[in-house]
Length: 143
Image 1 (cartoon, rainbow, N blue to C red):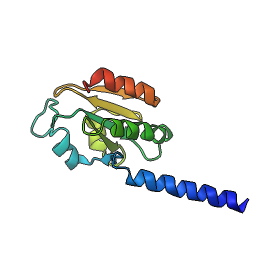
Image 2: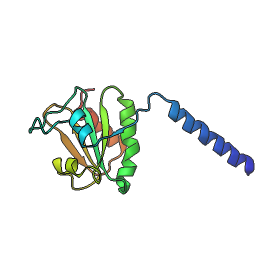
Image 3: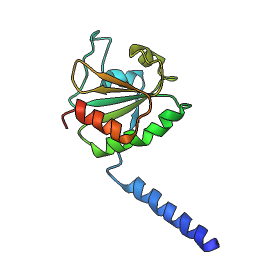
Image 4: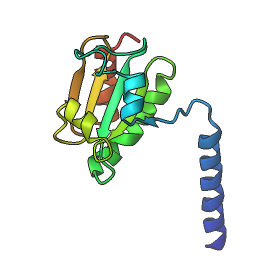
């Protein structure tokens, strides 16, 4: 029994180390209001939606207490890793950034915003599995 536990701990340690050292794992960044205005849309300068940058963006409006949000996080991480350099995923905590939640009329979590074009976006409400989000990415972004 002791050897089995030691083996499990060893395997877990190796797995965690491999994930941490994998350069394809791109950490999803949290956005605050200032970061949003710099990286996504400066609504003080452009009242109508005009996305900044060339890469498509996925915004994950979530809450730390939201179970479906926690279940969705690994799927968005996998999409960020798969499309590294082709799209960007950002997380926005609605409790910490109420102005951003209000800007997009977020009323339930998780709400995911897909910004492919410079002047329009699409939102998806609620938890979906990885395959569903993969289909949405392929349908909305030319990657």
